[in-house]
Image 1: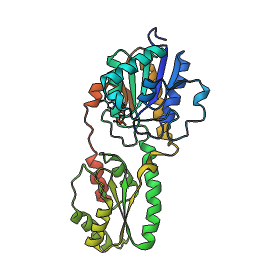
Image 2 (image 1 turned 90 degrees about the vertical axis):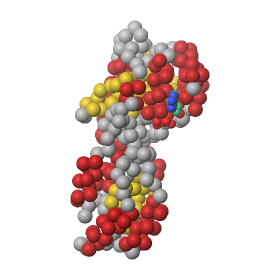
Image 3 (image 1 turned 45 degrees about the horizontal axis):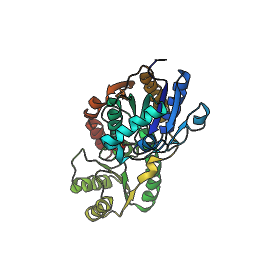
Image 4 (image 1 turned 120 degrees about the vertical axis):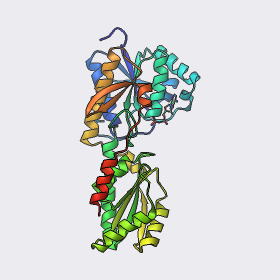
Length: 323
Ligand code: ADP
């Protein structure tokens, strides 16, 4: 164990995601395994500022690997966006003997982690969001579960749209990123996938439906990403342009819940252990990431400035086979 880091804190911040518990568990277990002490900080940076924290033990993370949500709770903390809030966070670390923090969350949470690192408290971020919209990593904890939840729901909608010869227009989450929409769209055989990254017109969507109808298909699924939105209007336009009765459904927050998939549990565990490994060496101001399927890490600012490409080839393939 390094002389520098004896006690680490762990917190979850921003939107929750299935698999956050698996990450917390890995952080706690790995840190204890390596002879460190772990403090669980509640409700994101709020708990750090307010001293809302608890001593973690091997058993305090038992029976959580399969649970959605986060046992540490999560929240947004406006105060932490400002220097005064960061100073309070730093002071709280000094008061509570916290030498480093693992922050599980998204880009916003990583900005806080960077600010605190620059004040001398090493912090390491773990990407936790269902949206997979963090540029530095191919994969974010929660993404796989969210897509599988979306698919479960869309399969149910498919049954009813098939019975009624309808078009089901389904909005999936992802904020401004179309990754969930693209993958869920492929996996459910959607006739059209509308994402912010690819320009579309309703005439084209109607054309796809009409062409498919000519080959004998009478029910359709159109997957729409959250950033595109307006599913009611899209359904109405499809109905007007094609004559196919259309219904809009917003899947919403169900996609944030549920028991994490194997992939989310495994990646969360790997990233949790990796983050502890960095802090053990006294290394902070880093985010853990997956690149080419391997776990690695980046400077937080470098990570925040990276660009993530939408998979246009995959989109093109989806359009080729959904005819
Ligand atoms: P996410 O981490 O999922 O992107 P948010 O953007 O809401 O979610 O950020 C979560 C929390 O991270 C915020 O409530 C705040 O406490 C902290 N945070 C966000 N942006 C900054 C920033 N620029 N500087 C410091 N802390 C920030």
